[in-house]
Image 1 (cartoon, rainbow, N blue to C red):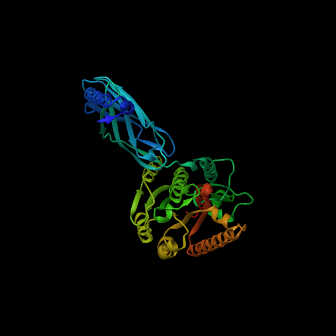
Image 2: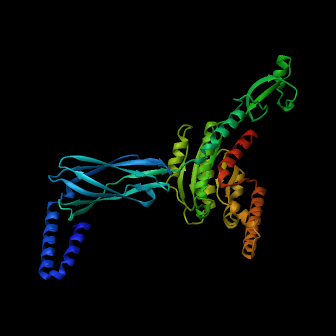
Length: 428
């Protein structure tokens, strides 16, 4: 049974009548009790309601999606009252409470708009219905389980860089007016020699046949292999700016995959810490981005130390041929020296390895402060952190690892630039 505020007001009136005598107060209370009992008895049965959902099942982070609740009254009494459709707080569901009025045998559609604030699967909790009697004093209340889930996908904010990267890719492929001769390592065509051509590109057999000097045209490699590795361990939970490192890595991975797919390369995904959290293998060019987005959506940082041996073994197991391995992780000293460095040799001997880490511009800001004593201590700590970062980067470079270290706002663009530079240099 549920009591409304109207009942409380009537009860307060009974208290105000107390100076007139106990009989008056008891009369008011007795009448109120009878009215409440009658209201509960006459309220529509919530058990007769049949509920089902329809609407969106996916959306991007921060984008609205509508989910409808269909309420059918299978009973013989009208159901009037309030309905609360409860979701996880991060689902951003509105409105929280709606009025319902469902006559017998009829159906009503109640819409809820979700604006999620976190990635992953946002789950509907339960539906609570309060059916009120004709007097509005009291009624019945009951919960219904009406399951539904909306998968919230990464926002892919780095999509804004995609036109620029694709233009550079077309430039490398020779699909725009600008023609940079000699780029790439795959044979494309033959043409006559002109001043400025690299003599190493001369095709001597074709020259002998034609009687003129002929050179080979090269184009950037296609159908190469790219493995994006997301470190989902404890270091990925750190926030850089207004987002976790893991989210910045996902965004960069999506931009890189979009460019590589357009280039005709094959993209795989591995997300792991102490266990493998997500994997995408062998997706076609048209399917790879949706597959990556779906695989990344439920990922969350795990508060455990990442197992570098597991990650290296998984990469080597999946990729027998030479590939570009882009490892999205941090440049923290201990995880690199204790975990990654001992296994780097097995990766760099077979693959081209790029380590991509999100830089925190606030550290540089702290290092430049000198306002007071506290600022000087902050600056000293920041300088030490920067020195450690430079030392770790030097260790990695000596092991043959290429590095991308950029702030969150340009991180995705920098990773794509490194890929395009390797492609142009024929190093994939």
